Length: 214
Length: 214
Image: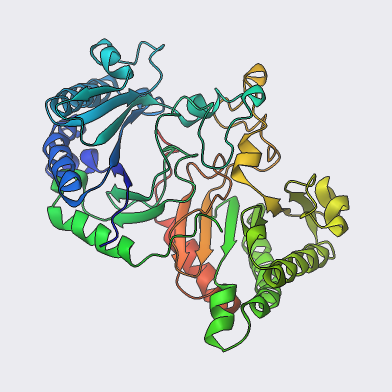
């Protein structure tokens, strides 16, 4: 079976999930941790080489403080959880800002945990304009599939993006690495993650041709 | 009815359409002209302010010469056809390359034709790496929704991208302007365009929330 090398994960719908249950929107984020871990294990099992999780963005930090604190805490916990697994882990985001949690500074250099079997990228206080804004002509950046010159230069081209929560858009997710990616949308909210979602996405991906823009 | 201000059009499936009819793949491109014109009229009718057509890319020019000549001719004809309508027209692409058709050089400066009612952008020999490669930190490029510093800086943020031909990806289409765009996919091939496709896309778009990453 043809398996994507690199999967991008947009774990959307935490707030809508909470609101549907009559909870405060901020209470949805914590329910995203277990799905993230399950997905990590599934990816490792089928031989995916790299996963990128969309944690939170600079845009997201403009939300009410209660929500901001909740998603920041969930991301800190998620990264620490992944650091207990086999993972070659990197947190990518604007760490010059007070919105970037201090606890995650040590993870902004790629580090092998366990056997480091799978490359895991986690976007925290990420902004697409921040990412592209580092490009300079001097570096003759972005020759075809090299991402030299981006803040996210250590994140590879993405093969498959899976988005939960039914929306069909990138919401600023890694514009350069996503240019050739196939999008698979799952209507269920991220806290309602099921392994079958992942298998359905893989099955669909298997039927796509890969042209890389050719 | 909430109407998208700016629609991006990925007119895919010309080659598959031709192959299905037992024609040479190159014969499909010419059949894309009339759909392009129909779509222009529909957009104008409902009050869309800007359309961007994905003509061909630097990647595409690596295809067999017969195909390359056919899609280049189709793009030249499409631009000339739009220049006979009300359009504030701009061709965006790498015009320093021999792959850029000389006939379209005059259109690389935005020009009003007729009443210039609707902004029309047409990508010709476009490359996402070429586009982003112009960015320089000196220009403090890409402050939120300004695209200053891009080769495509005169193309606005896209609200809705409609892709024909069933594939669910951007294929390098304007990565910066597409970051918040909603994607609507039509399984039919572009030469099989029907006005209903467009109305279905508008209807779907109307049901989407607009957060711009917030």
